[in-house]
Image 1 (spheres, rainbow, N blue to C red):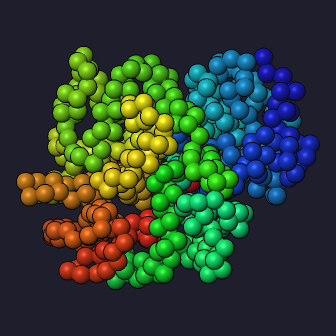
Image 2 (image 1 turned 180 degrees about the horizontal axis):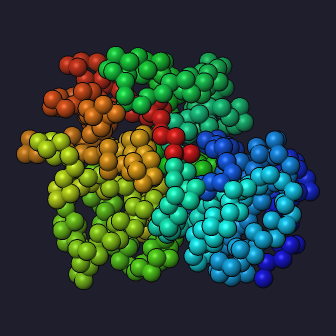
Image 3 (image 1 turned 45 degrees about the vertical axis):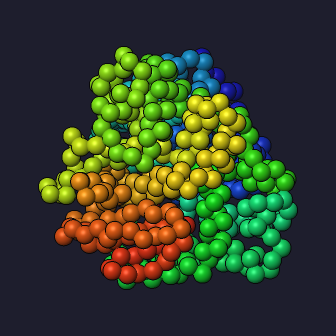
Length: 513
């Protein structure tokens, strides 16, 4: 049973107020990190339930504690309640009800309370407990923010709360985008020692001009927002504002290709580089594989089948294929419906991203055509592939990226998964409603993004020394973009823009924190 002492121990701001972070384990770890990346905040209101979905280790708990720290600037500490649900004595939802009842006694005098319920998917039927709060009228004096380490289950359980303060209040917290990565590093560049070798040493050298450029970089990037709703002239102009920093941006993009967007992996690489060790801890690759496979296990599916499917998908990355073709790559006994079920679960769990095909003749998605599947973060691919080949994760990554063809596939996957965030809104604006690729006997277009006016942006990823490409034309394609390695130009009504510039400027929807 939950006791008042257990609750008080998780809410140390009741004693220390705004200074709690020096005694809180999560905030202490954050303060010791080389980089502290900023996420978007939300403004919680009474009578509403906010759900935050994202993969494990993306930073959901730190985001909650940061939100609490900001709230404490304006409210009484006892108006804020935090509970890590995986610390409760059992997985029974009654434990949650008991904890909230204890807190209600403490916060009875306040007109509004802010409840942060972390790891709520640890509990069985947690949505029924929140539904009970709504139906009893107690939610009118509460703002409830919940996160969970099983985003697949959380998505389905949230569907049982329609019209109960949840509508419009679902948010996503994914690995950091390249834009977030650039702003985070350039804002904190002064915290690194100019030592070591490789990317970090080059970036943080003692060159005064380079240091001054880094100081200005984050403000410049912060002021340039590419939405793909722009006209071609405006898009070129925004890219032009970032072009003077292409050297710094390319160095940062080289690091991002190695680390992906998980904050703890980025910090591990930078810490090692700062100590003259170019590497990422091998345990992080193992932990990633365990988290990916474990997500399937939580849902009562086979880990071995998930492993086979994931490895088959990573081998085919960058190619389009049908589910039937993918089934032939996997051991016998895995049926077509089983494959679709697993891929859907892995997509809901923020492990994979599926890019469906678009029928240009009918101007709509074509479910019966081939599709492409990408990992949502490159570090997931490196972890799975290193397991397949039995090679240390960092060594595998370096060897993999040294091949131009593989590097092009990684950049394509980064571009696709970043485009998926541009207009993403949980439930009502899933990526499949605005982002596709297209192919026919004459070739294919890597990405098609539908703009607000219904027209299409066509994008090709040509991450190679030469950016020559066939110009793709269709009446519905209003803007044409070729994402390159370094070529920046405008010709034949097509914008050629380096990947590091394009991705640094590309913004995500407000629902991506």
